[in-house]
Image 1 (cartoon, rainbow, N blue to C red):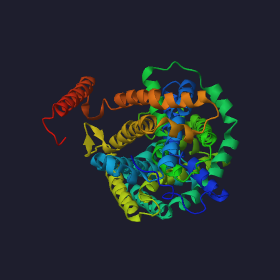
Image 2: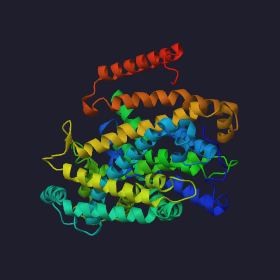
Image 3: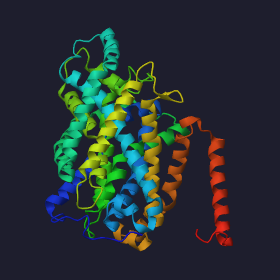
Image 4: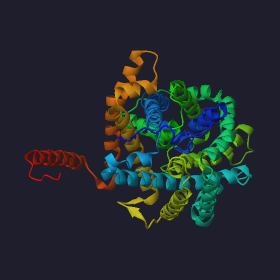
Length: 472
C-alpha cells in the first residue's frame, strides 16, 4: 500500500480562501461536458421523456455522487498522484498495465471529444455569424451534406482546439480555474434565464413507460456525464485539507450539474421534435439548425450557442490535467503534448471514417461509433467501478470514516454499503450489457470467459498450495 505523503500534493497557500475558490471552480467546471448538449436531450426524447430525466437525476444522486465523494476521499488519504500510487513497489507488477489502460482511456475520450467539439464549433460559428439565418428546408439539407464533406474545415477546427487546450493545460490548475471562472457565471446566467422553460418542458413532455434497456442507458449516461470527474477528482482530493467536510461540496456540484442539464434539454426540445426520429448522432446539432434557420437569434439562444461552443472546446481539460500532473509537485508538459498529438491523430481518423462510405470500420461500425462506444460504454463504467472497489474494499473503514466526516453513523453506514456493494453490482451489470455488441461478443462468450477465468484462478491457487512452484 502506498504511503501517505502529506507534503507531496499540497502546495504553499493551498488552504487559503483564494485557493479554496480555485478548488471549487475545478470541481464545478469538471462536470461541464458536451454530452449534456449532444446526448441527454436525444436520450430523454427517445426513451421515456420525463421518466428518463427522473431516472437520470436519481442515478446522479445515488450512484455518481458517492463515487465522486469516494474520489475525494482517496485523494485526500493518499496525497500522491495516480501514477505514483499505482507504481508503488507493492503493486508494480500490475501497475504498468493499469497505467497503460488509464492513458488509453484518456486518449480515446480526448479524441472523441475533439471530433464532437469540431462539429459543434462549426455549427455554432455558422449560427452566431448569421450564416444560417436565411436557410430554407432545402438549404438545411445541403448544409449538412456540405459540412460533412468539408474535412479541411473540421480538421482545422480540431487543430485549433488542440492549440487552445495545450495553452490552457500548460498552466495546469490555474489555467483551468481561469477559464472556468469565465464560463461558470455564463452557465448560471443560462439557468436563471431559461428556468421558466422547465415548466414548458413538463407541459410538452409526459411520464412515458420506460423499458429495462432505458434504465441501463440512464445509468450509463449518468456515468458518462461525469467521466471527467472520475479521472480528476482524485487529484483535487490531494489538495484538500484533512479537516474540511466535502459532502456539501459534492452535493452542490451534482445539483448544479443536474439543473444545467435540465435547462439544456428544455432549450433544445422545440427544435428537437422536428428531427427526433433521425438516427444521426448529431441530432441535437440538427435541432439547433432548425431553431436558428430562417429567423433572428434571440439573446437566450445566443448564450446557449456560446456555451455549447465554449464547453465543447474545453471538455477535455480535466483529462489533460491528469497527464500534466503525473508527478506530484511538477508539471509534465511532454506527456500533455504527446496525448494531444495522439488524440488529434485519432480524431482525424475518426473524421475520415465518418463519411457515408467509411473505409475505417470495426465490425461494420465507423471509427466514430467505436470511439463513442468505447469511451462511454467501457471507460466510464470501468473507471467508476474501480473507484468504488478501491474505496469500498481497499481503504480501511476507519480511514474512510475519518475522510467522509459524517454527522451520524447511519449516514456513514449507508455511504459505505452503497460504495461497497450496491454501486459495483449496478456498474458491473451496466458494463456487461454495454459491451455485448462490441466486437461481436455474445452472452455465452462472456459467461464462458468468466467461468474459465474463475477455473484458472482456482487451479493456480491449488498449485500454489501444493508448492510445486515455490517461486510463485
